[in-house]
Image (cartoon, rainbow, N blue to C red; front, side):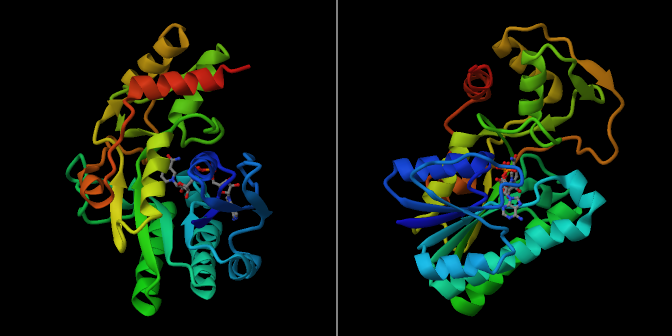
Length: 303
Ligand SMILES: NC(=O)c1ccc[n+]([C@@H]2O[C@H](COP(=O)([O-])OP(=O)(O)OC[C@H]3O[C@@H](n4cnc5c(N)ncnc54)[C@H](O)[C@@H]3O)[C@@H](O)[C@H]2O)c1
């Protein structure tokens, strides 16, 4: 199968590209290299902004069967600071990718959305059919991308699957920015720098390993899950304090974080129920947190 991966030089996208190439698929990447820099020599890299009309021209020329759309402005905090830029990349960029898919005759788009679209959920783990309640420009732009997918399916029959990703971690995640707590702890603890927990350490998140996430993308590239959105997480809540202990243990360093006051707007708890993805995609997470952290730390300590 021919698959175009936007954001394919990034953390999740490049892991997906490797997985698709290994699976015998033909892969091309669109990425502006603004944060990602990973390359697979088997996949043609097109250095383009997702908003660039060149994405449509490329798709018409190359005719992918599926487009996995991961290129995005990924930071909630940056979206609050500059909501217009967030919308430009995440809304305009998604519309441009959908136009490229339509014009090239692609069968399907697989889209990376976020648990941020749930806002402050009443029930945890969040059921697959829970109402969305975006509370940041990032959440609004991701949800807007989902609405565009539904509109293109209704108008043109372009299929889609939306994967609602919880906190993804693993090799290649950047410690820059605030999203990758595992990468931030790993980087600091291996370098002997101070680590900080905000609040009392009881805040929870649902950490899902990147290989499991790309497995969900690979499954969604096929015929399954058309026209649906799936939670991609483990359903397990891990506190910041426990995560820190696990990373410190795996890195073989003392477990002594500093504590600072909670940050405004931080969500107290999050986990999502992945059960519908088992029924819809045949997907379930295969890695538990200790084994995923071990692989992540081995990668981070590789040289
Ligand atoms: N990492 C997570 O925990 C997580 C959680 C929920 C959703 N997501 C979503 O998954 C996707 C991938 O995230 P990631 O963690 O791999 O981030 P990442 O920053 O590693 O990857 C994003 C890639 O997109 C590229 N990019 C950014 N803006 C672009 C633009 N305007 N044009 C072309 N390319 C552009 C970057 O260079 C980078 O390679 C994103 O859509 C993100 O919103 C990630």
